[in-house]
Image 1 (cartoon, rainbow, N blue to C red):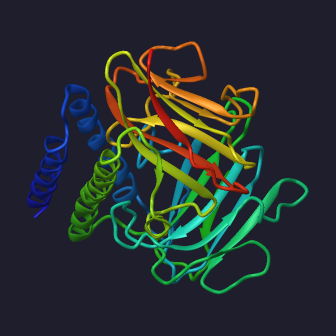
Image 2: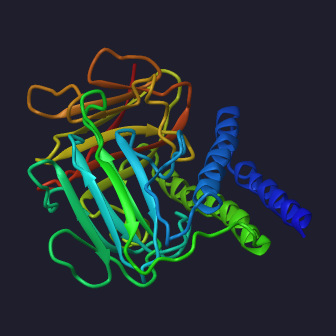
Length: 350
């Protein structure tokens, strides 16, 4: 039986390649697409196979370079697998990270699942923190005094977002989690049918995530070089943060062209702009100028910003390097903004 399970898993992995085959139009898209699938599969294996189960939860950091749905380059993403019928306690130290949010969501841990609806959300402005910087959050269906994160019976994960203005200067929050419901035995890996479900679940995670955001990119392509909001009702069921107003788009440039994104940022706690590839992965912000935020952007005298997407630095505005790409996706976030501002876009020769 074990050999059959492995063959079924390998066949399911091979079928993922169809997503790249039907979308890639050049070698960059194709190479990045296959790499994207390996990243999603790695994330799925971590979440499904390595998971210790909701009775023995851990705070898991998204594996290195696993990028999903216009991932924020300023973010540290963490997940906790839970069972909404149980109670949990998160303890931690706030430290100095700029933004900290906890969201409880349904679904099976896949961005492509149909029930990623938000059960509850708790963010740092609501968080009661002791004088020594520590805090405790009760996670349950029934309201608790102090910090409480609401769960529903179908809640399956808690997503933690930690956003930095400056990673070099800010210390992320330190977190621990425990299940406070009656103790259960630690799961021993002796059930081959369970392993089969875990392995195929990892492939399902990769496929569901990739096909969801494949659809998003095709939607953006209908209005190239523009930025628009996704329907709020859709975001409510796709692991969203209620504090974020997010504009998405698809950019495409001919040689010698630049796309200028302009806006006067509203009063807000944080904002960022980023370039992504076709697969909605942020470009390599570790080495290239492909993202900016309210601390790093170059402002005009009137308080506006001009973000310039081009293959080379045009000498004005805040330059975003296309990193050898001729097209891709892009995004702009306002976080805890007091007003909404629609960014404008303009194609220019350089």
